[in-house]
Length: 212
Image (tube, rainbow, N blue to C red; front, side, top):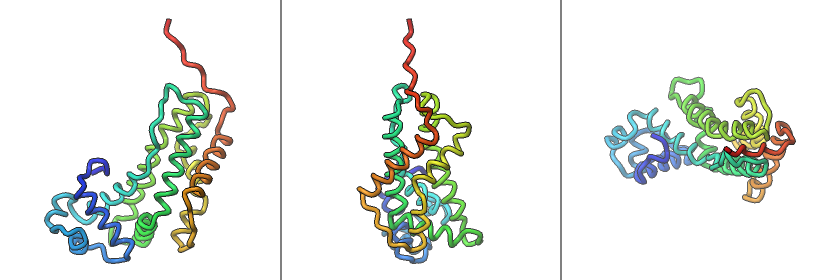
């Protein structure tokens, strides 16, 4: 149930789940039903079991990270940098929010246990899903002759590393790191510049071939 297909009422339920995470309260179906002012039967109808509800919550939170729109036909170095910067700023804003911090802390605490599959759910619907949104942008930059790399996954990991640095780890460990919009914008632009320096060809995009 991707975030963009959710009704407003369903989104409110998932926001209630995130609120429970931030408050550190137990994530039972009863607790979610009380917080969202709905019945358990409705939760089961919409999301299936508890893992289904958690998976939908993770997808809902991850859907807030977007790669943005880009035009493969008119891709140039400036457009590529703008798209990379926009994604980076969006991602930093989301991962530094109290809801994402609480969600990731909970997933880490459950990893390796049999309590829930939340760790796997976060990995599949968070980091891996986000990668699939950004990789087409990187591939478009390569097709336009702006970037040069052999493996898209490796290039994506490099970019995420440049964007995130140690920020997420510090936040998860309780560092009261303050990321203002201006700081996020500066960090995002810097990461985009560093990535293009590493993988850029230094050549402008080839001109489009006109049909005779």
